[in-house]
Every structure is written in C-alpha cells, then in structure tokens.
Length: 405
Image (cartoon, rainbow, N blue to C red; front, top):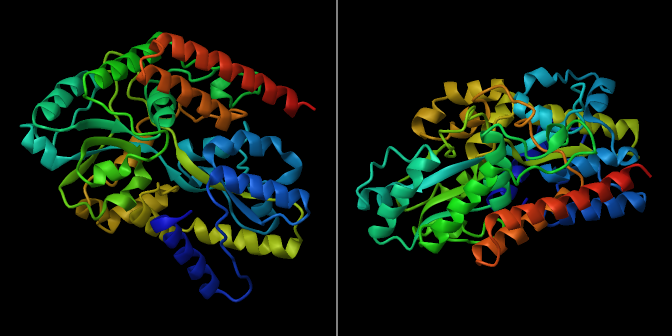
C-alpha cells in the first residue's frame, strides 16, 4: 500500500510495535498487488518467504491452490491460543476467504466495496436535489442528461469497470457471475456474465458513452482525480476512495450503487474488494506466535474502527461497526456507513458471497479488453461479453488442469 493508505498502515504497525516488546513487525512495500504476489512466491522458492503477504481478493483462488506455501490462519490462531471465530466477522467478508466448511484461510484486513460518490454542487447547478441521488439505473439517464445540459463534460465515470459493472453488478442483482457459486464450490466452474441482464446493462453504458453522458477513464482508479477536480459529477469507486476525497473543495455525497428495479431480488448485497493477509509457510513456531499476536491486534474493534474511519475500508467485525457508530462518526460524516449497509443488505446468497476463480487476474484483463472494444464501437455488447466468457473459460480450464498436477 502506498500514499495515504500506506501511511495509515504504517501507523498501525508502529502502534503494535510500541505496544509490546516481544515482536517487531516490518512493513515492506513490494509494489502493486500482482507485483507483491510475484515477489513473495519468488522469495518462497528461494527459502526466504515473508511471514505475511497482502493479497488482493482476485488472488484468493491462486493462494488457496498453493497449499504447501500457506499456513491457514484458523490453524495459526488455534495453535497459539487465540479465539478466531468466523461468526465474529461480517459474513460477506469471511465467506470470501473461507473453506466450504467455514474455516478461514486468510485474515481479512483491507476489505472494501464499491459505492457511488457524487458532486452535490454539480447536482444543484443541474437543478437536481443534492440529497437525492439516483437509486436505480432507470433513474440514472434523466439525471445524466440534466448534468450534461448544465455544462458537465463528464456526467458519469466508473473506476474498476470489471469489479463494479460486472462482478458487483451480478451480486447486487443476485444473478450468477459464474457457476458453482461463483467458483466457491469447485474448480470446474464456467463464467455466466453474458446473460441478457448483463448485455442490457453494458448496452445502456455504451449508449450513454455515445451520447456523452458517460466517459471511460481507464481500467483501475485513474478517474479519481477527475472527480476530485470537479470535472466528473458522478464516480463509482471503492469505499476506500474516501481517503482521497476528504479534502474535496466542493460538497459531495456517498450513495449505494444503483440497481434495475425490475429485476427480482435486487438489490441483494455487494461484494468485497481490497485484500487479505496470508500467512506463508516455512517459519518457526516462535515466529508464528508473533504473527498470531499481530493478527489479533489487527482484529480488535479499536484498530478496525480507526482503520475504517480513516481509510474508508470496511470495519470487518460488527463490534468495530458498532464502536464507530457509537462514537458519532457516521452522524458527523454522513454516508460513511453506506458501504457497510450495502454489504449487509441481506444475508449473502450463492451469487453474492464473492468470487473465487483461478487465473482471475488474467480473466479481468480479458474482460477489460472486451469492454474497451465496446466503448470503442468495435464490438456489440453481446459479442464482447460472449467472447470474454469464452476466453475466460479457457483460462479457468487451464487453471483447473494446473491445480490437479
């Protein structure tokens, strides 16, 4: 982690180190998530693995398959006498990192979910109620047209288009992104994000782009700056984007992601992004005591609440959420509890527990490529989604073969 969130993480590490004298945690930045995974695996093969590795959620399937390289967190905590009850954590978070029988393999640390940020000043200029952002996709187009008519060159932009407009879109509408409970129940899964509902949604986005109601800003969070500058009126971004927006020079709000009101079961709940902490194998029992102590420290309501307040990441336990609520933070900072409410709208279903797919980093690249072909007018939404599913399924079969070797 770099930037503001990296500084916050270092404060947590410093707090642990100063609060006891048995262990010292050293936080090391190894680049972005894929780079960190590559570096850690190289270190493991060289016999010098890190004790803890921060892995983004799409790397979960890969880490689970690397059985000899990891030490399950539930096992680590039990061996060192710490209570580690999955029921103490938000269900839609723990499900992502647990076995089918509920044993947590990694420690959920920086969990986020996408939300909608909007510029209240831009809404007022367009004659819109700044306290009533669109709740449904059906309400969205009239709002975008008014924003454009009022002079906005960027009425709407979405960061992380695959995570928000396909993965979370599926969960929020309680439709499968893939078979086998989105990969939770087996490696022999197949992608399903080319349904008529998905095609309908991408078609709407493509039409808005042609009409200048939406812009494409990149695959990751490249458009954050365009919202901070006031250029873009509506931004869909991670709840952790909050840390970047606290110094905005305009009035802004946070809202849940929109949904199609004519889809039965919507809205269901969103799914997480961010990362968890994996314990790597090949360390001594004495060192693992220190790792367990640090994870116990991280899970305390006080630390989780502080992390949530300052970063925008989710409080991963109900206790941390209640502590934050009782402190008056949500009252003083309206909208900062939206991420929690959206994640816990309903008990997660097989379609909304999360995603656990092999080669998911590469599958996301495929989805990005195909969506970019739609935005460029080179493919129809149906052609692009069909091709993304076909190419993604080939990557799943490759991962399945490799996992069985």
